[in-house]
Image (cartoon, rainbow, N blue to C red; front, side):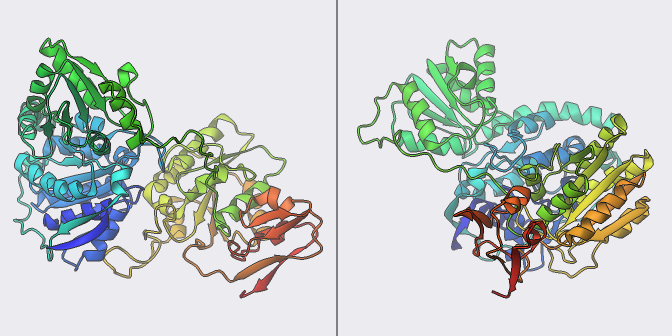
Length: 598
């Protein structure tokens, strides 16, 4: 054994390796991305590792491995589980042979997501078990248990860390030289692996009979615990358990019940607590999941216990919990007096608000500005997508009218065109997202004769989630150099007749291309190609000369964070400037120029 100080996501990866995982697939999405990155760091080539093109593909690759008896893990964030839900719902009925763990990282807040979706609810919907770790140390052990339960009950299982578990750090004892599991291989059996209505009918009944058995098994699971005694009880799950535990410390005058496996619910563990307690409080994030199950059990068994939680105003309906917030609601529930050594924070100044913005030198800013300039005075719709370029909605660009989910901008632009032929409809998508979920939308546009302009913002990486490779980058997670998948050839194969490639920093040329495409009917594509500033070395800095007239056009037009205003003149922050030159294209008096290699 060796000791490592690691992030929660790394603990999950190391736990999976200790469990003998044979294959890991996934799609990058904060807060889950570092899991696959860590497997890659420690992989000696014996584990197949891949960034799949999207979560659905990742789920199906992992399922194929699990059918063969291999241990497989698939990673994503909570909204990615929606993309993978089609195979997951059927996979729950078919089952698996080898252990299969689906890591779906939830993001209460939400900090970097579109939604506050609760994977515990998805587990119940899919009728498969879910594990809910409260710390990196537990995540390391619990992911190994998840593989064991998956194989014991021949079912995929969900593993639900949240952002504060994924990104926390801790010291863990981990295996020195873990080896992948030996497995039999795929055994043909169409009665088992081919999903027909009759098979689904029989397996559905089996699942409903099996799940109470898993719940009983979970009632004895080492991370489902009850401590203390008394007439009051606090139930907690996930990171909220750590917060409550920190407040209660070693108190024995209150029962603390920890739910580490929310589904199937460990009723045999919970029932004695509800029978003894007069009042219980549920502390959890997102849905009132544990609370609802406690109310159900109390009702079924006609127990007089009072259940407090989100439904009674004793918990947030959205957003994260914190140690301070958990201490507040638990303290009020127990009737504790405020601690005398509690630090008064009410008079502290508020932290400055720093909204997210496109980086200085980001090529997406130039792409948006070119389209905006080309469409000045014309009616146009700008459909955005999920990625760095979602920030195109910020002023002064104001170039994102819609943003729903990955790939939706392409198809939503078609819907806007079909309802308003007078406007020019644009869809912006990144190169990684194009491969993940954009191609079918383009097929739909060509097939249904939409009139739209597809703008592929190709910065040669998956920027927002940490610069992971994708099919267009020429490398994969096994370390192989592979032939790049060509977006132009894909578009030509789909039937897009007009395809232009332009560097967005060549502003005049980019504007001319947009104007030309706007005059052509049908589906057109403009690939704005320029690498992400985080993966390229800046070539120089920009300077502002004495010719500056203080008009602020460079600030008001493009909103680059490297441009400030002082003493009536624009000023370049050299620590942020990358020398992209977009501001020089905007200046009406040519006061901005480059000075090479500074």
